[in-house]
Image (cartoon, rainbow, N blue to C red; front, side, top):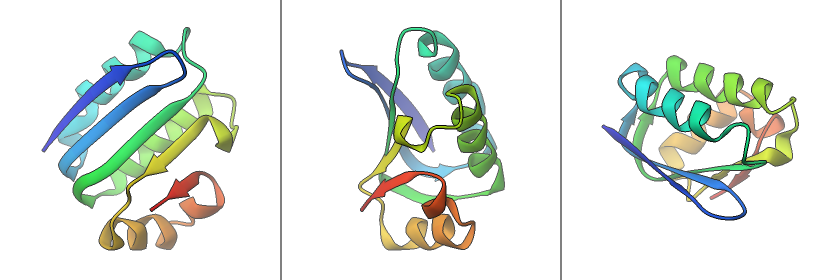
Amino acid sequence: MSLMSRVTEDAVHIYVEGNFDIGCYDDFNKALNDNLETSSKFVIDLSKATYMDSSALGMMLLLREKLGGQSSKVEFINVNDSVMKILCDAKFDQLFTINS
């Protein structure tokens, strides 16, 4: 598992590779805290994510809360079928913008 981030002028892009789990917490929290004041949108690229557990879902809820609860400020992109099933089972498709 790994998590990398890149800041552009319009968003913070977070790239997840492998399992998105508690092992990503420190890197995710750093990307969030380093950019929360200056960025209005976070784009989570899950093209290389193979699994997402409850701690990752919790990280996404924390991000949404810190951005004021606006679903338009967090976008999941390149979501594969297995991760999409996890997001839909958790009803995250009702809370976030998801583009597969």
